[in-house]
Image (cartoon, rainbow, N blue to C red; front, side, top):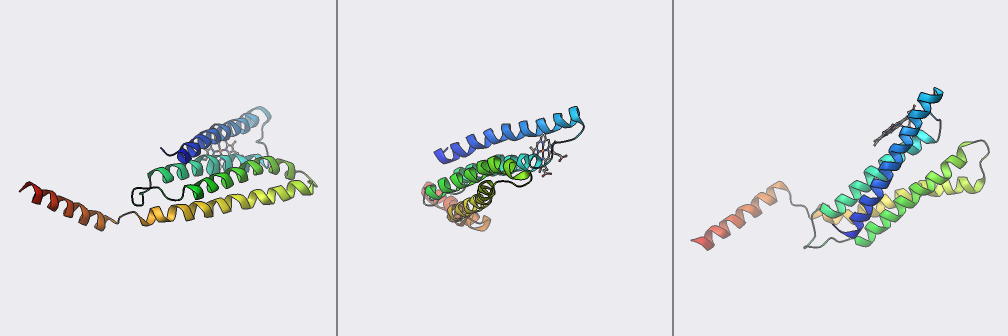
Amino acid sequence: MPTLSRWCVRAALVYLVGGMAMGSWMLVHDAVRGFTPGPPWPSLHAHVLLMGFLLMLVIGVAYWMFPRVQGRRPGREGGWIAFGLINAGLLLRLLAEPQTTGADPATAWRVLLGVAAVLPALGALAFAVTIIPRVRAALSPEEARRLRAAHAARQAGEES
Ligand code: HEM
């Protein structure tokens, strides 16, 4: 497994445990006090699990398993940029959103929340640019069938 994928999976597992713990805390809060915590916790819980766990896992596995281009995995730098931007955006959001939920939040926190909103989108762009050549390298079912048939014919020729 490439190092980038290993780090994506590690991060995904941290977000999985953290996001589930946040969900458990909200449900326990409901059981004990009769209501779930309000904003920003449900939305943070959802983003930690969907963007942190699911997206990190998908990116890590895609970079690892998608078809190679001439035997190599191009776009390692773009993958690391995507990893950095998505994680920075999510962690910054985890810090800034609780500070901006109350009345009259400090301008600095609002600016940071705005930055946190943009970073993951740039990360998504970096990932898309990184992975497109690997998608293009994938054979269509028809191409794969033709290649297998040619390979089988070559082998039959060598054996006769
Ligand atoms: C230990 C497991 C989990 C627990 C205890 C849990 C608990 C909760 C609770 C208490 C809420 C808030 C409901 C409300 O607003 O009244 C919630 C919302 C939500 N959860 Fe979970 N959850 C868990 C796992 C997950 C997973 C695995 C996902 C997705 C991968 C997920 C996605 C969401 C989403 C999308 C919301 C709605 C957020 C919103 O209203 O903004 N949860 N969860």
